[in-house]
Image (cartoon, rainbow, N blue to C red; front, side, top):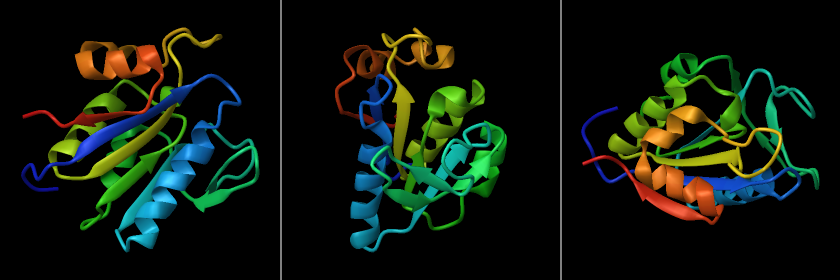
Length: 151
């Protein structure tokens, strides 16, 4: 990943069964249709429907790479990728925040699906996100936000 080229982070947050994975799949499919290079990741711990796909409750599917840590995720991002999707972000370690910021800084659009801060049982989807004011606000109101990388 090279110097900043205008990437950003989009967070899809909500409670269980709110359609987060469905929305993530929809956005990533639009990128594929636009002939953008897309990579999709999910945590190794999430094997509910498939180990190699992100799957929505209405059975929409998108091929994904399972990774155990944020460091592994970062190492597996391919050169030339324009869009990265990450499902179930709340299950990653604290390093996922910095990885996502690095991706945005490198000009990569990064789409994240995560549990809402107000949705039990998690209360806060990922404590490390709280240090980023823009991210905290996006998680707080659960609306679709476009967050630009650090400058």
